[in-house]
Length: 402
Image 1 (cartoon, rainbow, N blue to C red):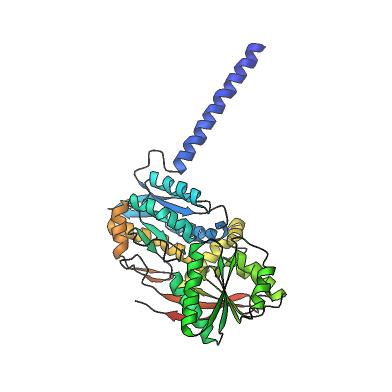
Image 2 (image 1 turned 90 degrees about the vertical axis):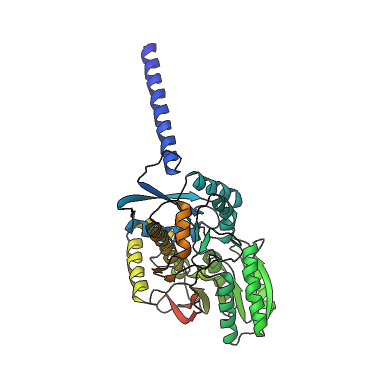
């Protein structure tokens, strides 16, 4: 009997070891550390899946996954290559960013897409540059992200552009005193707020500066301070998560002035939770579904894809809305595919050279890059929330194409 028990125990131990080895091997395959299939091209998705930036990043990830679902292969030299997305979590912080970046470098990816949030992107770009891997920034708008970095290419407009657009729009509406809200200890948020302030002052307005914390949900004391300053416009550099709390609490406390925000307010989260408190909300966006037939077709198909999966709906903010971040992410993936085809190679350096000269007609417009890696497309749609129809509505289109 004892021998039988010992035999069973030994068998269980062996099976356990085999299962563990299989799990380890599978993990290494996901991270690209195993010997790779020579007919597979790996594209890194460098995004925060946990932490303060995870909800915003989900919209970019959805745009990438949707593009991948339509185009999972690419032709090189007459041969068909499978594409595999290697998704890593940079955890919304510096240590996570460094580890995630190194994982993708070790995996020898052809290109990297991301990251949501300028700080996470800035932390990783030097590592990718050292490895000669191109990075396509999707919605990280700070000009400080990749100064003098030759491997970084930005899909969206910069904070300098959108802050200037919103300052000019506010002043054109005869608002003269602004409260500028930026995130505590975030140099990128502070820089964007400074850009808005400088432009608003140049036009002849006044500005008072305030701070909030990332992920903050209670704004009552801050709202009291703002009211005491008797401002007639608020410009808040935040994500939609913070915005929804600030907007509702502001209206409940009697702060009825217009509230403006950045591009990432173009979100299903802000739209799905819109209420009668969401009056006079304005932001600049890089995408509008009604801009042209190509944009409209993308929005229709993307929304249909989102609505087929409850988890996608949840990740998209509770609805099937086609955000600018998802549209830009879709274009970022397609841009890499076009560069691979144009260069007839999956070598990161060769693909990066192709990206520098590429001209691609995407769902967010024609995409080209200058020597600084900035997009030549400077197009913004100033949007508000149509409370009657519960949808975003374009009030003004601003274009400064170069």
